[in-house]
Length: 148
Image (cartoon, rainbow, N blue to C red; front, side, top):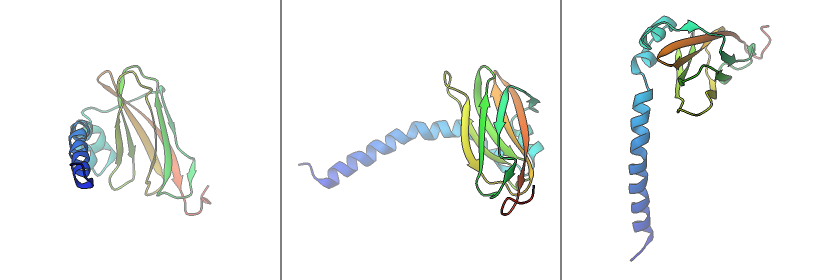
């Protein structure tokens, strides 16, 4: 007999099974030592090596952010073989904001909003072909956007 309870049990079981691969993928992407780092140099060393500067990374942030709680960031990598994009904020208490896995064959582009504690350099770190590359851009954080 099909009733509401049976349908909900089947759906809950299906959702739990479907979530397993996502959890496994998340554990591959998440780099706990990098997220626990308290300064930007420790974040870079937690990635395994110091990233080199690259002009093939387009990092877009506002020049002046009116609200440091929601700063828009866009990163595009034209480096062939990009597998990960990370966003780090120099002066934040926890500098590493996000790490994104880029599946093979997809455009290496991410857009998100991050929290920035104060005026500082925001970095995009790209992993491609086993090497690390970075681009940085200063964003001024003001209350009301009048600190130009």
